Length: 553
Image 1: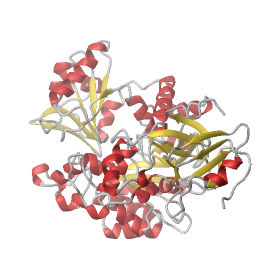
Image 2: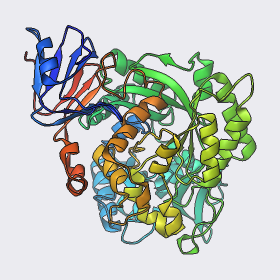
Image 3: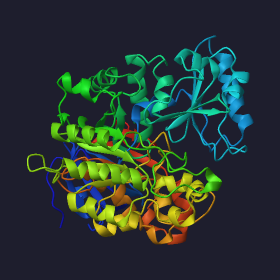
Image 4: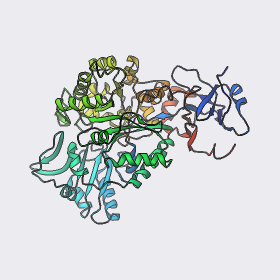
């Protein structure tokens, strides 16, 4: 019999209620006062309806805990909706990339910036980055900067470099590279060198940022998300981003529960925010300031993730880029740890993971212990067995992006070789060892579509059909667990959301069909085509594809 309480505002019935990994399924669920008040059979839950209860007939569909996007960049994603889309799904040739930049420049005022995002040089027909000269030809009167999909490098045209004051004698900044060939600038800026250009791009207004936050939140709600993150707050518009988020919340335009991560590199805002009085866990369940981020390296696709063993010679060789020397990393992580922030530190290659892990271990003192802090290594893509052991011993969490295997897996093979690519992002190993890996997308680096990410966890197939590390596949229940409860755990919210049980927040997503009713092969073929029909965040409708709850009782 169901554990229940009176006062149902909404009842979902007539389908499958997946409550969480290891919990029994149900067919009906009641929501009241923003929380789940009952879960059970239709016969048990439907009698809780009153005269004003809104009923949703699931008609065989699947309800799950709302998804948690544990690692993305919500404001940049929202702003990027108005930038030039160069993602590899649509742009596979250099000519198409340049055509899109030309079209944007032709409609922009003379001298206005043209910003593009999402190209993958490995997916372009020329197999290389565009050059400044090529961008000059299609946008002679506008500064242009386009970011690679990983966000760790980009190409500027001559006008953009002139605005930034970058010439052929400009030295590489610490942790960054300004590419030159035969002494000439190519326009490619890697890692921290990008700040030279980005710092002269006019920041968006507060009103524009609030619009972007609202738009991004709605996009996520339409995909079944009720919780998300902004993983590097302050790197677009400085402290103004904090004000934009607070305004979005005050105006009721924040549809996601946000776990906010301050930019902690020296060029970030963590120190300024601390001086201004912002403290760990400030805020509420809608907007929580919880962590600080520092970059240790770059991306494996862009050859800037830091590894012990070099990249393959055919890919260009080298061991990647460290953003900081060891002493600086120890200084930064020790400071933010002592201040009480959760550490959410970007590290992809095994050498960068080692640097970060050692810095965290060094910060572990009797006065400031790591135990219970749930520090995170973001991405943690190419991790060794010993590193996993040490992470587990101190409760340091991996926050991976399984979708990277789908979008970039073949590039990993080309850059690192098959054995290393197959061992990347080991979801099953992490689960089996007890690491609680929270699946995420790093959007706008990769698609935020959760059903592509689920496909990657179920199959380990790339977008070209290559299977990499088949022994690391997950079941549907395990994959959903990583996308729901594990994300909540990484944000200290597992006692309030991530499962569907009485007393927990009514954060719920209704999918277009019952994935658990599909045979394995049918599930694999159809999961990428699933949609979200209804999303609730604290019992409030944030997405209703078919109008099931549209102002009716």
